[in-house]
Image (tube, rainbow, N blue to C red; front, side, top):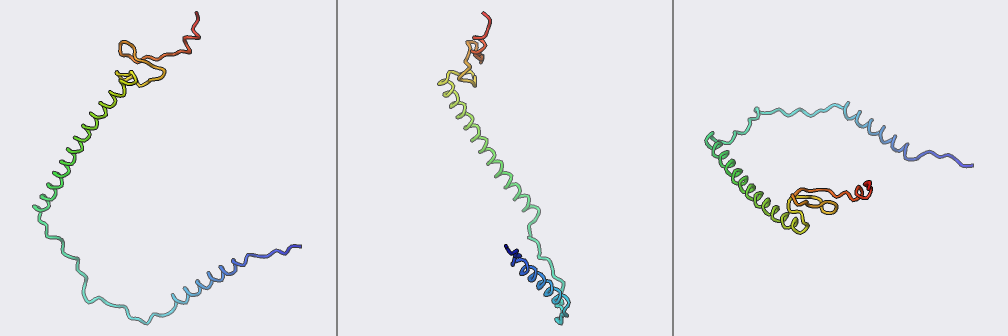
Length: 129
């Protein structure tokens, strides 16, 4: 016959929870003999920076001009990258025979008009004779 045993951790956890509850209850019900500390004066907020409206305008103008120059630099970089991309895609399309932008290389080809037309080899075999 096997003997059923209970988990030994459960009574330990329950005992610790009860002990914590008793400690909290005793601490909250005990009298506190300490006198609360009173403030001698009302605290004052620190004085703000002495920036004049003109200083603020100068700062904002400098920030806007910096952002504008950064934007112009990014536009120049984008233009250069677009030109580089066009040049590399033109080289790649000449290698695959798709100068006019036909994106298919395996089952499509460029017609003499420059139109991208699809070869449907299966339909040609099944077409009635």
